[in-house]
Image (cartoon, each protein chain N blue to C red):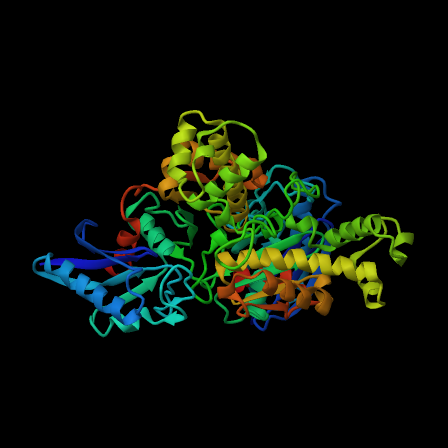
Length: 314
Length: 314
């Protein structure tokens, strides 16, 4: 009889559920629309149903527990608080609600922390005691590991590196403030940069034919690889800012490595290597040439599902 | 027979040695000039002699060990590396050198981390699992405690919050870079600010009669308390920058409290309370009104000696 840990990644658009075995294999999966369920109760009911469906595909098994990664998920309280991109407002007691359906251990954390645990347990950070995980998606998520432990902080919300300030009074951020790192270093950040650069320079670029609502970071990457000067500049600007803020972070916590996950991390030279270059340039001398910057070893996988399952598997 | 732990605070100017008993009382003390000993060997010999003198005043005792706080002191290697304000260049194997004279446990850390341990063991942070210590002296030192453990990081040099960047390309810093927090928020930082303000504004102030080499942060405080508008502005600017950078730090590590130590921390309303005000203003909503900013409970004591002794006493 095999052990199964359920890992769940609740995103603003979709929720993915995976059944993970002791070998870190996702042996069954399901997904549902998050946006569709405006009422929390309806979402919980649908989620429970999908978990049952996934478990029914696992044969005879022991359920070790359910781990959930969700924006603004709180490890201590099992709740979601003030998540701007989820349909349910206020404080949602997620683990309590789900415990009406399942009697196993249920652990909640935020999505970037789930990814951090994924990297630590199954990825490139295996055996590392001090590292930083950066997830570049619509926003910038992060997880910090110190002395082998994920940093939750006094209230469980530590690790919001994406909301450190780059430019006081700068770009408006979804958090209600301005100038946050994620408005520069993320899939949407690089798009904003591309539009700023088109406004500033006269350099020709295919990007001038694509409206803001249509341009993606993947387009910018494609153009950059074709030699588009403005697209290359957008990547360079992004890496410069991320490198500078990582140099700051290294100064405080001195990690062994920084891992970068997310679509943008596929642009290895343009993001991962360029960020390392700028980080070294800004680094306090005593930390120079000590901190690795690496693409996640789990690129292309559902790292948050794996990491969330590891919350209850280990 | 009582237990004695030796705590040593090596500063750029002087070195202070204290014998601390189990009740955290400094029962004997000595000090020597650090600057005077250009040769490391001479310093070590003099240091050992002073430790023996201090111990000779303690009556019958058991020596638990020697704890040392020193700029750029490394907990892992027991060495000092690249300390700009100490006479000995390169890497100094401090604990190895001193172990030729004493066979007890010898532990080295940097001065701000020693102060952090002082606050944690004897001060306002007793029982706290997550907090930040800021020491405002000539520079800005810091210590970060996460999950009840001081953060040393991968290489032992974590906690250099004073060298995070405030203004890229800003004020020249002793570390060889520019725009570091400690060039703004420290005793010398507030003086630089005062001179910038005198250059910018025409407001009358007594500070215009004092040369740069003579003005102290204590003078600025005295003038501010007399209602000097420019001196008040210098404090406000300092608190604004420190508050902003602390909001950044809280976002990443979510501490329960921030403690401020050093001469400037005596300016409670102008530094501690003002920093708290600005920190809240810049804070990510989910952290608002959660993090205390407090003066060290050990203001006026030799916190680094106490903290260094605690390295070997507990």
